[in-house]
Length: 250
Image (cartoon, rainbow, N blue to C red):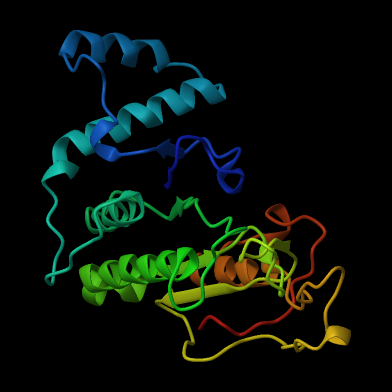
């Protein structure tokens, strides 16, 4: 039901026994794929009702499903070409899982390399290169999905913002306010949501940060409610009352 393309399980999927963290679907297999080993592992997890046994059975089901569909042979549709690196390959595998109708509900990608303290650049440099690459990966995913994109919603979120002023290394240090982007099915796109506090010194906070005007949990709460029909948001964000955003269609 949930997969993270990462070396570790992200906090957003913590506690979910039906979540899987992998760096590549092609590498997710038994070291010895013979019937005797598979039968022995199946017997080990067959009867237990604890979290480890349930996770073991789920893992074996995933292995069986992937063996039948062969992710290594997947060819993107509609002439889509993914950039040949982790982000492009991870999105290609997400598209593959969606199209195979294996029950995937949530996919998480953790993309590093954005800590632009030096040589950040404006129209050229580290940050423009990263942004351009992300755009090409998302465009390939959108092209590959075609009409099926109507049932897929993508949210891009940074774990922290950047400070407004440039530092001595021609980069920017860690800041407060950032942004989120959404695209795909159910997204009322083509506009900026939220309040813009401005960039004058009196409109900044702390040592020169953009003010936070929207809690990321408000965006994700609406996504969970309107796109995944999550019945009880209080279990996801305890004690939080989301701000109405109206980003996603009902």
